[in-house]
Amino acid sequence: MVNIIKAEHQKAKRTMRKKFIWGFPLLTFVMAFIFTLGMTNAYAESVWNWWYTLLLPGMIALFCYLSVAQEKKIKYYHLMTIPTDRRKLLLGKIIYIGYMILFSNVIVFAGATLGGFLLTTHVPVFYQMDLPQKQGILFWIRESLFRECVSQSSGLFL
Image (cartoon, rainbow, N blue to C red; front, side):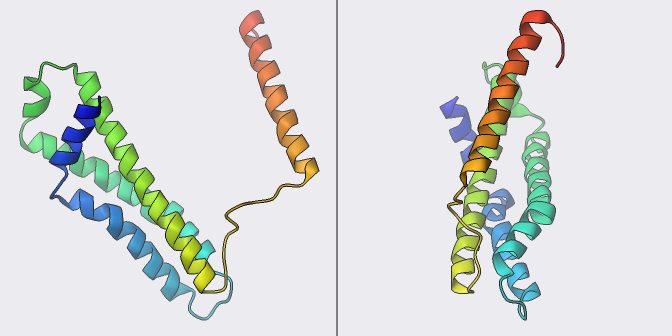
């Protein structure tokens, strides 16, 4: 599987897809900076809002389209001639795309955090929960596990 992911990386080496990994986060930073020029305490939130509502879905769509279009352009030659299962090849492509999207999210996280600190606003990186919130989360986890066990053993949906 690692070799399949490396092959996907080699196929995308000098394509527009590689530029999207850096380009879309940089576009997000510029847009957030321009749109929050006169506001205080709004840069980091603006980065997150623009990224997750507009630019990340667009990047995913373009990244997937360009990946499939590259294979279609050569009439799926690599998928048909390699004696590896096609499911593994497509799973490797999906894992590679997921890795690139994760890398872009890390870039956005680092840029929003750094830009937030520089522009006197930030989204808390380490969130401190108080005791009632922790107890509520633990109660929800315990109830979910209980419902899952009961529904599997009895066949009922709770």
